[in-house]
Amino acid sequence: MPHQMPDIANNVNAQTEGNLEWVGMDHIEMPIMVEGLDEAPQVVAAKVAAFVNLTVPQAKGIHMSRLFLRVDQLANEETLSPESMSSLLQDFIASHDDLSDQAKIEFRFDYHLRRSSLLSKKMGWKAYPIVLTGQYVKGKVELELAVEIAYSSTCPCSAALSRQLIQKAFIEKFSQQEQLSQDEIVAWLGTSEGIVATPHSQRSIAQIKIKLPATIKQYPIKSLIDLIEDTFETPVQAAVKREDEQEFARLNAANLMFCEDAARKVKHSLNGTDYPDYWVRINHYESLHAHDAVAITVKGITDGYRA
Image 1: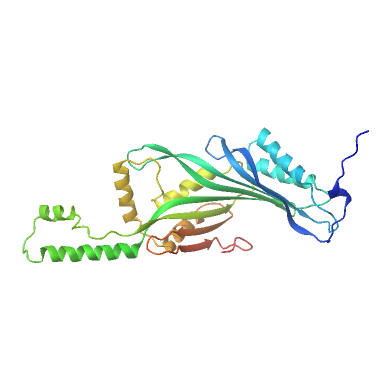
Image 2 (image 1 turned 180 degrees about the horizontal axis):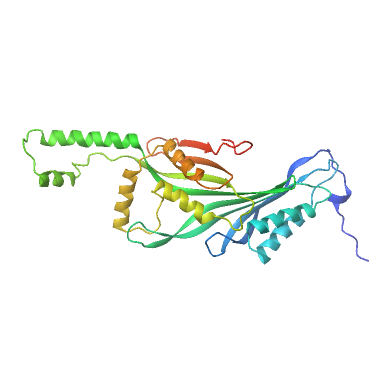
């Protein structure tokens, strides 16, 4: 007769009693089909974190395999949408009804979008780091979307200092000439002597988290990315020809910004949406300094995100 396998988690009390806020697994690797608004479902290579709380002080532990198998079911039989995430969280609770009354799930992955260049309209892929999170707390499901968006930021102070040096070089070059032709000026501006200084710019990252409305059916990944990239006007490009690079330089000059400017621009754009709450962190990875310039802002609602 086969021996019954021991179930230590069920049959042995905890060595030290106490409730635990979250117990589960992290870095579960799964291919997941994601339902994005205005986009065809996309398969992503996700890393998943799955948790429940432990409300029984004497319990040895939770049933981790039940969490894993439910995530695996989603990966193999479903697409990831707000509805399926909500169902998954409730199943976590149902499978631990004697131990848990809260659940949390997190999917981290890169989401790929085809993006058009500025003028030549050449197409290329861009990858955006995404985190989709769901929590079941006090009988209510809360959903969150987080994204990182890369863009270029040019320092207004550096631009002003560069203009001053160009003015100085112009005076030194032509101070002895009483009259100047337009052709002479244009020719000089086209030389390295004419552009004696350029402002410094840096690749920058906007980290955005938004709470999602309870009625949402698909994740608004692309629309959120479009909103933020349109706000900055200088998103990092994919395919680039010379005319695109020149246009990118023009846009940088037309959109000079400190990290404070960037944060306020994003805040203004997000205030024009119906997202219940948001959190923004702007990171300018300085080319002048070894440190970063950072600005953080939130919507500022009661019991909402904190900066």
